[in-house]
Image (cartoon, rainbow, N blue to C red):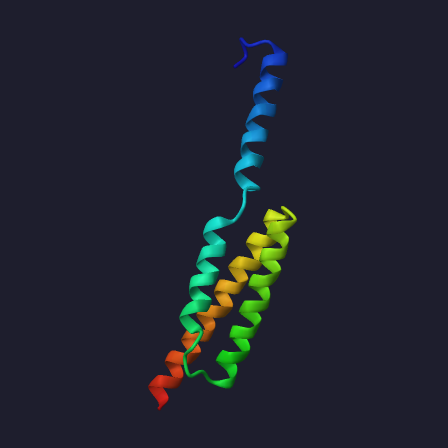
Length: 102
């Protein structure tokens, strides 16, 4: 790129940065869906106290993610949705362990 004028190099760098930021800061659609599905898998099951506690935490995190999504705080919404999914999966694992021990 040494043959390009400096302003073109700068313009390309700015364009690349904008594209990168646009991709990184979009709504966390997949993460929200994953969290909802994981929570739904736990709901309605006969759960232990620990699984119920994890499910409550997952629901609270999903509500937080939804609130952040409404404010367009996409990075925070994504983090909360990922954590909600993790908590719901942990609750599922707790349920599976309970079933094995019964």
